[in-house]
Image (tube, rainbow over all chains, first blue to last red):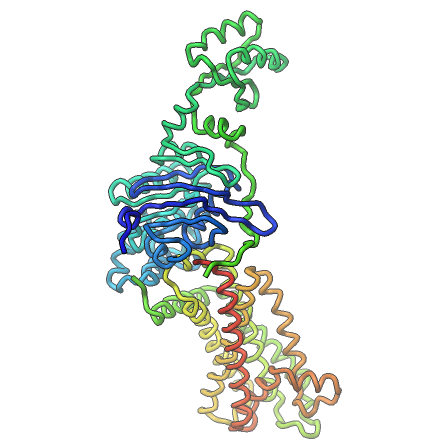
Length: 336
Length: 259
């Protein structure tokens, strides 16, 4: 029976939970829906539960509770069908350093059941698409981080999946490699209609790439919407001022406190979300001047996803992470 | 869309063989170390042939069986560490996301052990014969010796797979290596079972399956065709391989909790 979600190639999760023995509840009741062709950015610090969620949605880890359907198939009851519908590049490019890029493609396409002739053509096509045709016959052990990530993406696409899971695909990459990967992901969604579920801890990645963003913290989805919607929810810009004299910082905090709530995101100065919006900036300068506080730097920041994260969790995304309990033992046995 | 079991085994076997051939560090120690011990034992224990009841005048011929077992023990480490690395790097998860069957994964991974077993057997026999050892069973016996050696190597390889899947760490697999060597030293490695006069040692050696693997190989080198010893050797190797595969299959199910 073909369901709506099968046709749409989307993702649905309802109250998804994953508990670990000797560890916290890594995923704590996540519900989300991703329609076909959307790039969904799953944003959160290390240890928030992003990778655990991906492992459950890709059938590699059974949920402790809740349900999820990927491409219209239940992740617990219809694992093989889910795996046939998805491609995944999980955290850390999982490659064999002793094999060449072409040998990886051959193995992946063969295991997915592509015919011999198609294996070669599909492998060559994908290697060219990710810009690795020139290095196809080199052992992967000699690839750079960016090349490994691109090969990882090509392997995930070997069997033409309708849904693609990318778990922190650009972590550790330089700007150039990151941008190239973003372009390919955007092209896949726009031209091929591939649904992309992308986890990231980079604000700019979610901002630049995702149609919608879900913010996860301590296993819970704390906000969801388009980047514009989420920023609009915060609404107010932040003014950040750095005093010329370190000793003036306390007085500066008091002065700026008259204009709004502190955002706590300035390491050397004071940051305040302006209650009255950017029109208050002139008043802020006058107030500081009248108090005789010399300013080294003054900046007005438009709301960012970090502000959204801060508003929702009380913490800044930068440095908010901790290690995800990847090695923790599952509390429940795998479902049949 | 799904590939056949045969195709899956073939693809993973190809990878396993490529990996083995591209890692001289796996091949060279498995050849050099047993040959080194062969030379040491032959030089140091050659007078044992004068013991009453010793089955041959050539200690080299007697001790030549040992490198085949030592080499096979390396396959525990090689096949185990290869799989453990796949677990540690996430490559196993990549494979788990394909329609790969567990039986194909395990069988394919043993292909590298098979190839290493063939290389080892040919080298050990060639070196032994060049050094003056006898092969009483003749050219046909060489083929049976090759088959037996590879069977033992692959059987031991299954233990490596089980250890990798059970512990998920290359270090843990390597830690097993000395344990398996104890089995070799507590067997009829340097003297025939009948000539082991120390009671406790004789008892342990007589229940140690490695003794019978050695005796099967020796029967081809020293006696010619002793079907009883050969059947026991092949049977024990097959039993180790079967138990190893069953244990590895069970550990794989636990390791791969894919739905």
